[in-house]
Length: 212
Image (cartoon, one colour):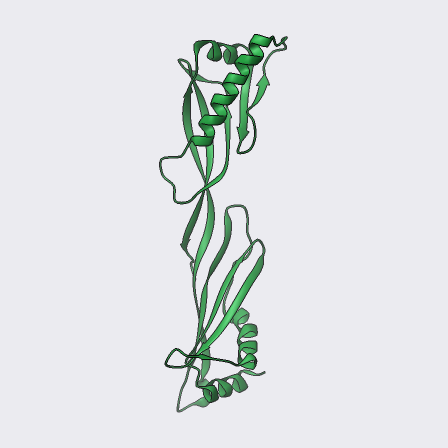
């Protein structure tokens, strides 16, 4: 269908406004849905007109579906109106306006401290160079020397592991909007007294207005 035919059909049907709801992200357009409304807000059915608009919208509106691990996608509506020049019919055209919000995943980095017993702190200081982990993972200890781990050391490391896992699971940054469950952490085994310094990375789900 050509634009002139679509304009003619729009007028014949008495369409006042067309709306397309959409969401996109993950490198693809997701579901879209069109509605046609008359001046009183009543729905009008026309697969032909919707078919034309569904094709034309991509030539008139930019959608940002490419995700990059930080930007996730966008969602919103496109509104279509007929801009009519009663004196010059060739100057009549469809006007497309996008109203959308973008979804982002923001990393929040926090330096935190976990209080340990003196024995636990001394064990780390003597044998461990780095500890890291995250959501759904047990703390991973990277050792700085070779040694034979005794049952007492095994129990001590188990106690430290539980404290770290409980602490990081419960930790929340000072400011966030919609915190995701996923997080990671790392410690270079630096201490303030017996407090182990842990660098947390949490991920926040943020929604902002799209640029266009």
